[in-house]
Length: 165
Image (tube, rainbow, N blue to C red; front, top):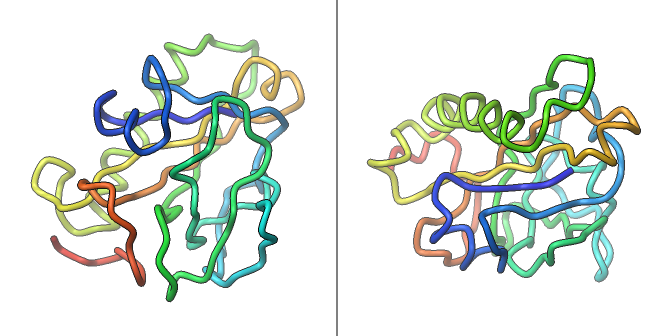
């Protein structure tokens, strides 16, 4: 699974990546990704990236290109991002990174507007996403996991759901 953002400049600063992508090793996140509690279930080292659920808040600003864990924290505490939507891509052969990134953009952008209450261009927040790599795809990973974070890369306290800013 990998992640990318709407613009390379914003995401490079947030997740310290090159070419607007991160690669995560492993298989799919929980199917559908629904029902996240946003409560601290983590360890200091991080939680299995596939345990992230919609509603969870993450301290993922310093993840590297290859990650299998991301710290999940209580949303009432300062955090870097919040998982706001998850959707599985259609089964079949690995469609390639460009196709997956295009799908992720078309999935996460409208859901961001619904979640935050404003379009990305008008919001103090923006979005990124975790997505399958070829390796994780072969292991059954099909999930796009959308995350919202502060446009200025500052930490957030509380949920951005319905923030309308």
